[in-house]
Image (cartoon, rainbow over all chains, first blue to last red; front, side, top):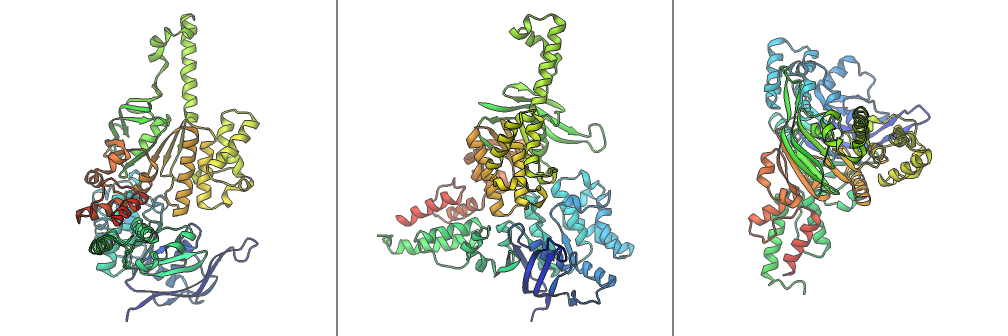
Length: 297
Length: 313
């Protein structure tokens, strides 16, 4: 039985809840995320997905409902400084704009900022920083000034800073939005590696459908509620629903769906990656040829 | 015809300092007038630096940047001899001629930021006015246009950017991220630039937001016949919206040409740290398995037609 890591029950959050301009952002989210899962979170701008992420380490406090992370009830009144520190060590966050996340004047000092604040003693601190830089391929820049790096490099420094805290879970809030394709591929490889090899629970909030297709599970949040939850194949099969809320599906899924709509028989459920789509199309073409290509007339 | 031409342009940051960095290394490049040109390249390849050279925000360390054949960084002294023969200067005395030429060069220079509109990354952080209308009007007002003309341009720009007229009286800070981005775009479009340069205009937007802003840009381009340059990391968007593509890597131009030509160089693109659209990747996989599809498919629409044709045989 997998271990529960995040548990929410009717979780709600309202910005400016007491004020005249109260804006509900989350309107009752109930879901379970297990330890070691790799989850992509989709939703249009303003859907509430970033709000959801910020609740997970209490950057925002739930307005109502229940939220348990790593066995800690975050809605309990007993949450104090000590618990908060523990929580934030467990749940790291990487945001979209690296310029807002870098604090030091030297790359390696920036990476050391988190673990140092956790009180990690010196020889270990050094090892952690070196390993984190290595994992993000930034070792060569250890002595550089962060503000002189390119956007992609800065983001990798920010991720290294989280890695060095050895969290149980990392939430990426559109962390690849500013990266180039190779930077994105590299960060995605890193997510997979952190997930597979270290068992770190990954939540990747993204607008890139191809990225979501790489996760084990996809959650779609719309207008503060849960719209879909399942494997990438299951979720992307609901193409119409996703389009209605301003999302899309990967291009290969789009192709299969349109061909099916045009009356072409391409059966199969594995529709979210280019490789599996190629399999389905090849198989369907094979059957078509067997029938002598007469099925249309 | 070339709208923009770069001739042996180099740009070096922190020249002579330990952190000296060559951002552009002897780049030569032509941008066709009236086309949408996509500029792709890994982070740090020099794309953003090049954009800043196009409207004089930065001056090349060496080399020349031409807009409609005019060197935008030309000094009056360098032009003196050539222009002295022109009828508008030939009749003047030497002193008056020098002064007139200096004035003309300064005028062209000042005009440059209106002719070449730059939309930076995350331009919504640059909004500052009380209302959307005032924010969009900022550029045209600096052009010293009449109030009537300003009002006209604000509404026109808002239409191009797909902003409802009712949004004009709102505070830009009350809008959604996608709307704010389009207000920033409208602010530049309102100057009716001949060249519109955009750095990652769709970054961070959801799919619907991406489509809305890119469609807005295309609407402006198609209606006005202006020249558009888009820097982007999304190969899918590039394949869909661009006529030409320039590929940059390590401060140089690696390839430039029509979209179809560029996206057929799969290996070179991957080597440059870039990608091909997913649909092109799928078509490649199918071709490798003997499915007779044409190689040059870069959009879902083309792929649907091509695969449909196979099933109709």
